[in-house]
Image 1 (cartoon, rainbow, N blue to C red):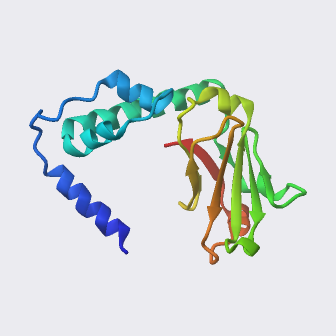
Image 2: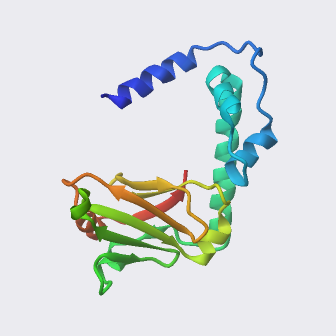
Image 3: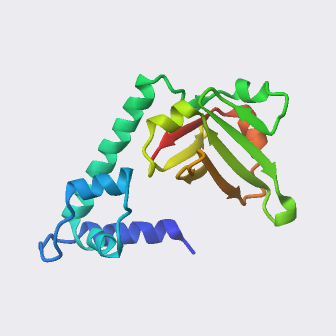
Length: 182
């Protein structure tokens, strides 16, 4: 299945919608709460995002504002978002990549049918600078996204890596890793 093609088609359909106002509005404070402290958007609110171009525009605008606020806090608190390859390669335990603000642990799990389990552990400064519902992504400087998710209450994000052709440990020696809000 070509998900990129399907996403483009859905985007074109949504872009051609005209705003009628008949479906209601999504309050800006409600959007901000859904992106930061909760509760998450309910089924009706998700439907509104599909039906209303204005609601989608407001959602994307507020999401960008919230992301920038988080980046500003991270910058003010001097939280490092990037882990350089040399720092990762110098660690005695090669499956643990330690940065100043977060740690990435790569666990081989071939017996489960997947090459790796990726565990990201946020440091206290990083965790203090984000909202409870902040979605983060770990991406390398080669453009490969390793994982995406919300940290749990312990500041951990865990995800399987299912591509057997990509050796994450080898990539960690060649590329820097960045943990950033989405």
